[in-house]
Image (cartoon, rainbow, N blue to C red; front, side, top):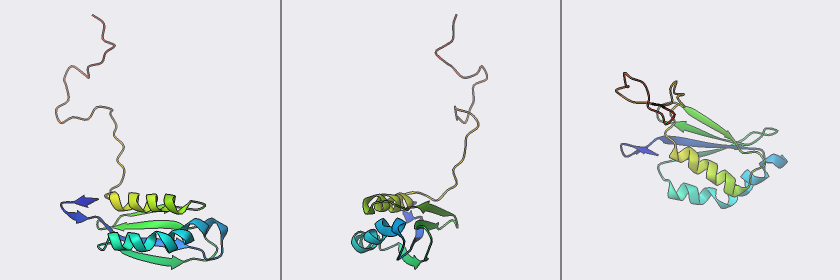
Length: 119
């Protein structure tokens, strides 16, 4: 995703095994879908790395120095492409868990309104 017009995903690392059965889908992805992905996203640096005996994964490296790793073992090429586009479209921020259900700048002094209020 672009933040202020700048794509946040800087590098996409595709790690696979050329022998293992769990990498079958990512090898097919590299033959069929990866060249089109590179052509549609010239701002993205795509690196393939061979790691024998390991399960395949996609690693996204973002401009804010965060990394996201997605395991793609035993996935179809379409599912691998979906995960790669999800990495491209995300901002790379850490997921923040909110402590309250209702988030506002000015919280109510009287409390949060609910439908279960009885008069």
